[in-house]
Length: 265
Image (cartoon, rainbow, N blue to C red):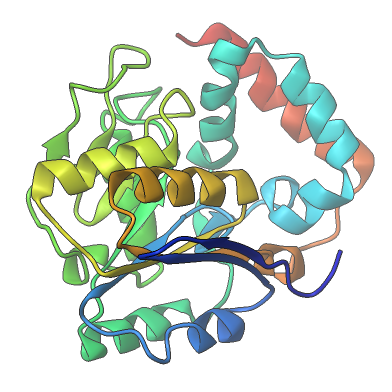
């Protein structure tokens, strides 16, 4: 895979671009000319934070990817978002890059509006009565405070969008949550912009999954072609430090959360 993957979408009033980046320093380079009309939007898991257990860190998931895919495939599609949530619900969060809080402090000083966009679940699960609050607290525990960066402050529940487990996409404290994969990140982001009346001139969106970036790119293009778009496909989690783990230990951890997901509704 090349160092940079560039996809250009040209039209009369906008540009769009997807670039592969491998470190926080590379992300920072793309914010050099950003200003208050540029919105920085960030995926959370495997971009900002990850679980503190080796089996669910990105580097080990990539190392044992065939095992992870096999376990995920053993779970019915309607329960896979529960499985993904369980991979972090029982664990503390750690930073993918230790310099991330300082990066967001710099964005705040420069007046660059920023918020998170995650496919995490909303509602309640096991011992957590509010998964949205739990996700925000995980970020705060690592020194990331989107409530200080977001261009919109009030909480929103998107009841006009499809529900999953009788819960809806939600916005809370600078974190926009799709509530699983039923609604794409692009669709939820556009609903957020419509509901709030926010109108950025440019968006820089960072995610570890290229499909999510394409989703946002296409949704913004359809919603408002004048919005300039830059997608950063971030692979820094592959290089984040992690403790060694055997294939047997990895399998045991993944099969345990898969079994638990099968029991939950």
